Length: 243
Image (cartoon, rainbow, N blue to C red; front, side, top):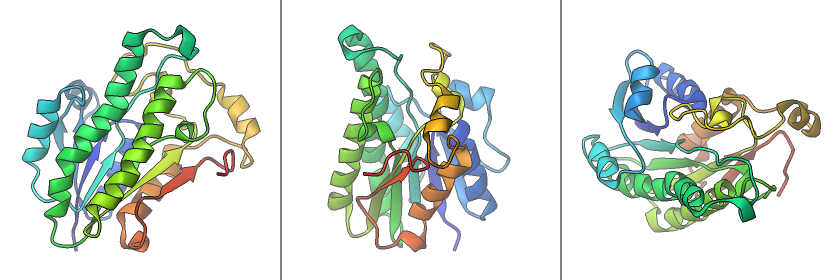
């Protein structure tokens, strides 16, 4: 049976890989992303694009309203905060990161949930959190706080949406994409806040993650193979963090 899957942040590094894999499996994909990103990096052939800015609650609501029932929804949207201590973080910078990551995840989930509930069979939502949401590191305070909140949001949604909709998350470690430089849909506002070579040396599997490493677990959580999983977080980190 052909499914309809909406992917928020579909034109980013992980999003493009995931979108192609879902489309190539024969499912219908709707790519949700910033208008500028959809123009600069259009989704693959055969994929419909819908402009969406998570800072605009009305645009999120209106964008989802025209999608109809969904079998799956993946939220990949988000961006990193500049690397600095919380004590040195301006309130405006903290608010922006929380709004774009946590408040945005709430708005997207709230808008997507009725469409998932309208699917004739069971549906699935997958949030993309971060290992930083549970394994705090210095210099990433606002982003880590937002992703910790997203994990809690995922668990609450899983309870409230059961049994028809399953809600899970993945928590990647560093993934070598444009996201490290601010996100595919944003200006490169800061340098890469991590040393990728050092991260690879510190990871038991000897490298940092690729977009494919994250897309696979997301596809698993969208599919029937995970039919008895909800409220869970899959940690994708090459063994670097084992909760």
